[in-house]
Image 1 (cartoon, chains in turn yellow, orange):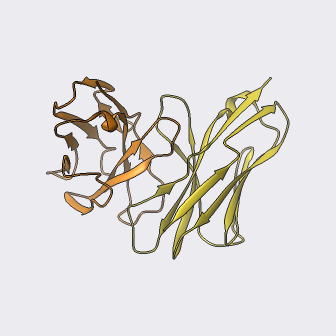
Image 2 (tube, one colour):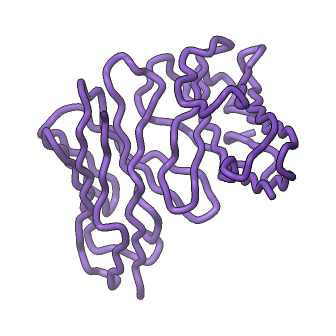
Length: 111
Length: 115
């Protein structure tokens, strides 16, 4: 059975204090791994898609990387506006529409 | 509108009532998805449409759940004889692609509370 596990569950950072979030997965025939950001009371907002091991994507202070078993979301010099829950999801080959999400990591960045 | 619109934003139902949740996707988006999100958890897949065709309904938890998208645009998720365990946020998302690139545009969700 496919599994997506995110750690830590929660992370509290000082502004400027860089850190990484982990997403470990087991899926048969990975088609893609996706990162989303979710603010309270809102729907998830797409950040990145990663397709193969070794791939990296960057957007402002965020950088996502992928290995064969896990993905990391690196937050460099975070600002308070980076506070959110970060969700990881996977899809498998042949299952076009279905994303399987992890439970998320809640990040709080204090000034 | 510019984004995915869902209504109602909040719904309180008595156990046993039927509810209908509406989703207006981004204009021209081919694919539409419904997810269920419990408090503190990630979204769980319910069903997926490509235009008016329901291609995957493997995530619907029981036959009390029914979704439709008759004209390939607006979609409705219907829950019959609601139970307390149906309380959750129901998220709708759309995508411009036929093939799921993972870039889904989500609405703000409909929060259902069953008493």
